[in-house]
Image: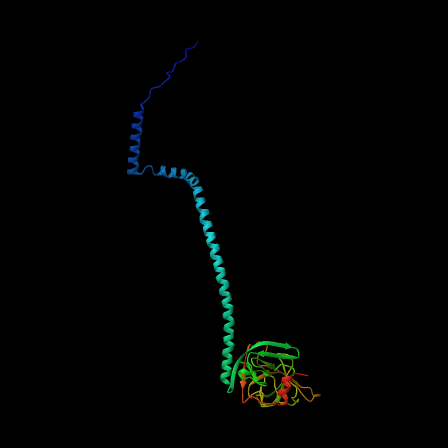
Length: 296
């Protein structure tokens, strides 16, 4: 049998104290070298790269918790802020709509005041309460009545021209007929040459008819019609309409002449009551009576 080499069970080496001293000496040497010459900087950089994922993994739960909490708080704050801004916007839009309406109303009133400044007669601003635009009746109801001095046959103006006249005056309100009513007739004259005519309503808010002008009458497209003052209901010199078409048929005695009212009859909100003289007392003329009673 071959002899086997027997090894000792315990190999004696440096003592524990010697090892600790050696490690401490090496650590001090490394610290001194790193402090003076910065030899371990590259090692620290490499170790930081290796350790970085571990740091991120350890900090991930805390970072995720903080991120979720901040997002939740921000989302709640944004929802509340958006709701507040939405309410503010709606309120602002409503106010702007009202301001736009007030601005338009102020513009109309300024136009009426400027118009009344040009009128030598006494005037009063009245608001239209209701409109009846039946095919055969163009009537309005205004918020001024006999308590304010309104009377039957009184002329109504807008900022642009003649609108109509009162047919029935009550204590607080009055009913008026528009110049576009088929039963209404208004004495006018052509401003360019003074030619007199009668403007009759056609049932169309944008058209008046002048049925009694002969073919040889001096009338042209674009001529301005003003009230002639005849009949006493309308004061003289107020704009009524503009001639839009003139058709002459040699076989007919009268020309077919139409005019467009200068007053915006379908958009007027306020009118002026005009006192051009003393209101009529007692019986009125046949024309005013016919206007008050309406068409047969």
